[in-house]
Image 1: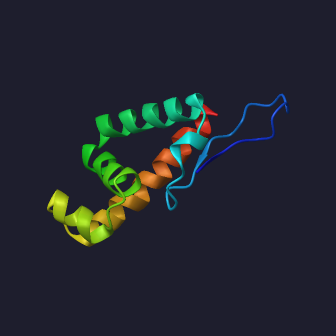
Image 2: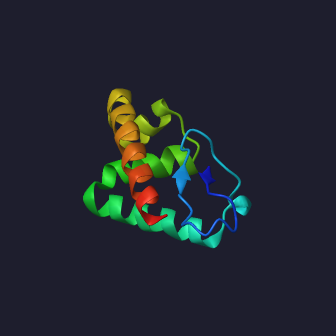
Length: 97
C-alpha cells in the first residue's frame, strides 16, 4: 500500500509502496496513482520485463509460477526481477514524495 505522513504536517509526504499486499485502488489518492504510474513507466523504459513482472504479480495477482509461465522465464528469474523491481520502485516513489 502507499503510505503517507500525517495530514497537515507541512512536510512532503513520503510515498511507500508495499508490493506484497494489493491495496484497494479506491483508497489511493490521485497523486499516489500518478506517482506509481510515472515510476512504472520509467521502469518499463529501462527494463520492460521487470515492469511486466510487477504488472502481472501486483496488479494481475499472478503467482510466481504463473508469471514465469506467461513470460516464459524461470520462477527464479521472476523472483529476482520481483525483488529488484520492488526495491527500484520504492526508491523512485520515495523520491517523488
